[in-house]
Amino acid sequence: MNIHVVAFLVSVTIFLFVIDLVRRRRLTFKYAVAWLLVSAGAIFFAIFYRPIFLCAAFLGFELPSNFIFFVLFCVFVFLSLLLTVFLCQQNNRNDVMAQKIALLEFELKGLKKKMNVE
Image (cartoon, rainbow, N blue to C red; front, top):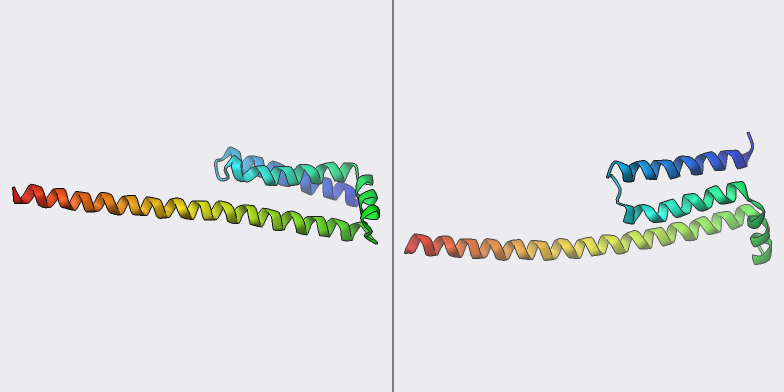
């Protein structure tokens, strides 16, 4: 089996898997966009692989496979950074929510004391 066919099948499988995760609400579209773009790019380059050879030669890579690994490394570093930003935002939201819950519990205890005293 040709490596281009394998790359195409793996990319399509990942693309469809991410769409299925979004459909079943296991992954939000906000997080799925990056994975869909990466897999769509992989599908494109599995079909039209000449631009990879041209870019690799232009940028001075000896082998196109080294260029592919470099690009994949950069993509995954970017995705890691993006997910870290989302994680930090969620952590901040959790902190704010915990503070609001604590204030509500404090007010509720104060109201209960006031009701028992009077």
